[in-house]
Amino acid sequence: LMRTLRSTYPGRASISPILDLLCTLLYLGQSGWAHLRQQREELLPDFKHRLAALAASHGERLLSTPNNNISMAVSLTPPPSSRPPPALGANLFIRLVSGVRVCAPSNTPKSVCGVSLCSYGMHTDHYPTAYFSVACAVGITQNDTDLFLKRLDKALGEWKGTAIPRPVVAPAVATNPSIGAGDHGNRNEADAYEIDS
Image (tube, rainbow, N blue to C red; front, side):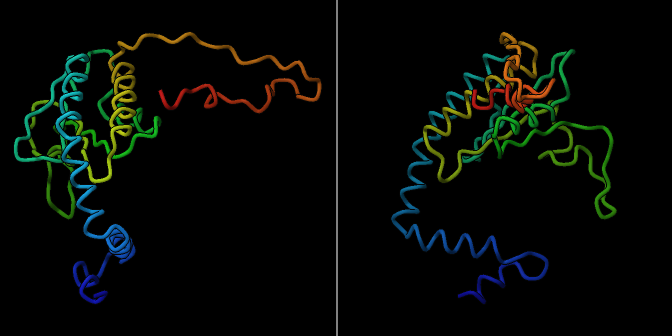
């Protein structure tokens, strides 16, 4: 069995991910795997509907991908004062959102192994707008979609400059003489950043 698995991608890659997948599938069994797939298929319509509504509330649209029943894509139209589209991906990553792929068209070709590619990383060379893609993957739960949409809403608002400003909370002033001047209890700016909202 291991020899057969190893032969699926010989050479350059490590077998570790393949071995992890094998162990996971053996642990889940046929019924566990079927349950996860069913759960994903049940969540997809609601997730897609809520993602489309959220996109519309930010002036974007869910892109039509009729032959893809796992991934969805949302347009990204940056307003004149916003940062470039990849900044949205960074903003989501800071919020512990992984798996979102931000794609932005480019007029500058990139050379990979001697092959010139326009808009490298996008699904097509000449798509008219930037977009991000997200998947309703096996193992996703309702809580995952709720939290993702909450974080996406805030990240899109900040990226577009339409977020409702939060009040700035001043750092606590040290009153304990054992704390050195300027050391407010080892608190730093990252401590004030609200990750999960």
